Image (cartoon, rainbow, N blue to C red):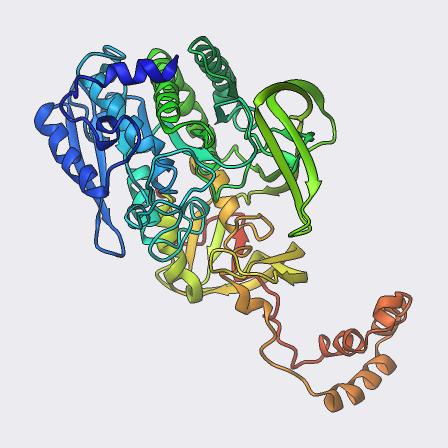
Length: 587
């Protein structure tokens, strides 16, 4: 039903028609088409569309955004004055440039809305910002074999950038210049809703799209309650259009075993929609199913966007009031407890899932599990659905904020700025003050590099110590609207903290050593004169692992030597209960 309707709508070859439409959804255009259309839309719809360049890629290509509003609300300042809901179409078809559904669906929908053929009047109530391609350099690494488990288009771009960075792992650490440009654009507009479009990989089944919206099961109640209502209405509308939508990412608990079940998960903010959740805004992840034909996926993407735009235009003012309320809450310092990671409980309930007949076996070639689906035999599977969540890692924000010493201030400051966070610099040194410091008691470097970083996990706790505050130290107040993101960045045990990504690894590597022949006489002298150390030593010897490890035994005494490096395993970010002396509040 969807495919004939789609083809009928595009037979007339309307102006601004894409390569994809002209080919009957067999091909997708190159980036030159995006540049051409970005120039053509404002000419076709003067006063209603702007084409903005918001960055340049490492390979020298412009990063483009189309802004659309039928009453001329085409700048962030104008949208803010009108308290206009802004919907930011961050099309993940252009961030993983092989998943290009969003680019072609977005141009098609935007043209029809501006022509009055779809969603009449919606752009009087909503300003839409459309980024057709985020990963521009990856888009131009064009070829026919980039998505072997995806049905069309015949050629696509590549998943990663020219520097081989996966942009949809980069939101918090902000390594890629493309990401810095995108974050700057995003925080300049501060949209109510960020919509991120993908085509998922994985198993074969009948469901053609999943839509996850946050806050829904997590996040501030003022946004969560209308979010639950919005996603329910959206899914009902998609079902009425003949789709089989899911409210969760369709990945099995055991990747090769459908009967293992599925779960509702909340990802860390390295990904787009949980990143926007950390800013206490709506983040939406849309995943069409890669095994569906491209024409069907583009039509599905359009239907999702139409449904979301309609609901946001209808309820936008109420949602904006809710957003203002949660912003005021955070600015006042009322947001203290932050969940840095969620996990599913073992509780589940059965759901009906539309799959296919399949066989599982062990491959005689690879000795790996091998699953084969028979798409001629649809089946309804009864699967366990794990949708109960609980906090896995939490943090309590300080009453004041965080302090970043000048040794790291120069590279941390641009990241804070890209994230739209407020901070100040100390203009003069301050004498030692009581602050909270984190000393790691256990560290574990990850054996493999991820996105060019050797990650680290640490155990330890915050404790009060006195430390000087040199000139140039950054102060990051916790009381600001994106308070949860501050915790994600600077709390050391968060999965996406700067520490966890490996930016501070040097501080957890021993740089100075004490020779054994120096420690030996010191250890004997210490045991003889300090009963507390002797008692601690005897207690540690009760641990068989410690007692059997010569290096641990040596370190017990080396840590107590006056020459021991007191900065080893000290996280070089502090917490404070109040702003440093002399700083004025900044809003």
